[in-house]
Amino acid sequence: MAKIGLFFGTQTGNTESAAEEIQKAFGSGLVDLHDVAKADASDFADYDCVIVGCPTWNIGELQSDWEGLLPELDDVDFSGKKVAYFGCGDQIGYSDNFLDAIGILEEKIAERGGKTVGYWSMEGYEFDQSKAVRNGKFVGLALDDTNQSELTEQRLKKWVALLRSEFGV
Image (cartoon, rainbow, N blue to C red; front, side, top):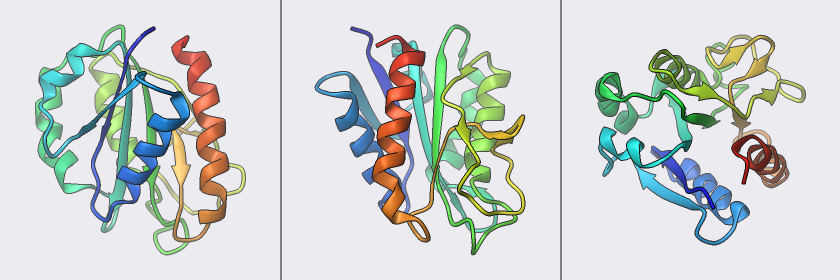
């Protein structure tokens, strides 16, 4: 079976918890977790399927470990890689930049040849603007544990089922 690399940055632990749940939902031995605080850009080379997790911090900013890794992504060739994204944010408190971080990362990785998979419906969310929206959908799974924590588990399971199909695992 194909291995999947899941790269996440976390500030409060929510994104790390979501990453662990995604790993568990895929099943034993299929997903390798990488905290970007300890990862190197060259680690992406080991995977044909990649999952990127990042919370949006402050006013539409990348989580600090992703911010530090972002310039290094210029040296990574994502050609031929399928890349899925998930983000944690607050659609009410930060409705003008909900999930901007995954939009920023998706733009950079797509420029480097990554094929975005795992688009997610905007249905059930209320926000004003987001850099994570392309053609009427989020570039990946949108999680809001501040306002919709009761939906997180169901959303994760549904998204992982979608990714199983798109990753071919």
